[in-house]
Image 1: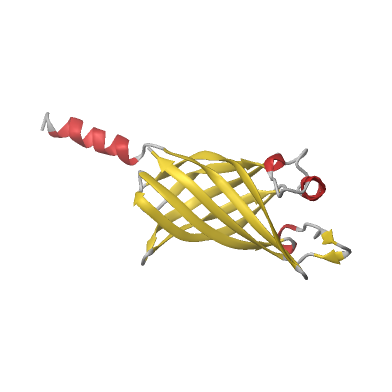
Image 2: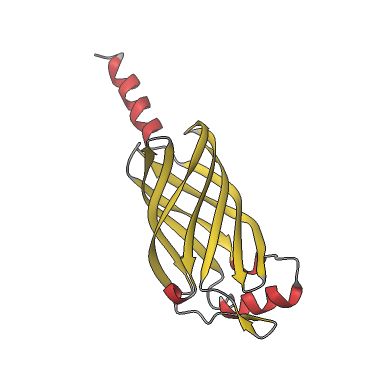
Amino acid sequence: MKRLLPLLLSFLALAQAPYGVVGEVRYRGYYPLGSWEGRNPTAKGEILWDGEKASGRVCVEQRAWDSGNGERDKKAREILEVETFPLACLYPQRAGYQGARFVVEGELEMVGKRRPVRIEGVLEGRPEDGQFEGSFRTRFSDWGLKRPSFLFLEVRDEVDVYLKARVRR
């Protein structure tokens, strides 16, 4: 029993050890004549995961979005109110394999609002030392945001979001 207790305590500590997450978020917006992309390499945070339930947060700095067009990025910073809401954060609640897919469910907080999000993707490697790539779709209207215009044409409401993150214990 004396040998079993330290082993059990080590296992419990490992099960609750935080996972460090660093990565990049990209988005794709659409207008009637095509699409554009932006990227943000500032994703970082910590999560706790027991194989099903998850907690913690992973955030991006909203002012770091880069689409390669300074005017478009300036307008995006205005729409996202980055002075008031400098971070967008994912608060995971559940994560795990559903068939071959790895699914993260939780809430996304942006512009002072929280909305449910479901991110489907692939986890390569082991959960404690792997790479996650996933995506989800959101809408400007979901957040009460004004859609920007491009060449006097309003962009589509839908925005695709792609995540690529390294996970390490």
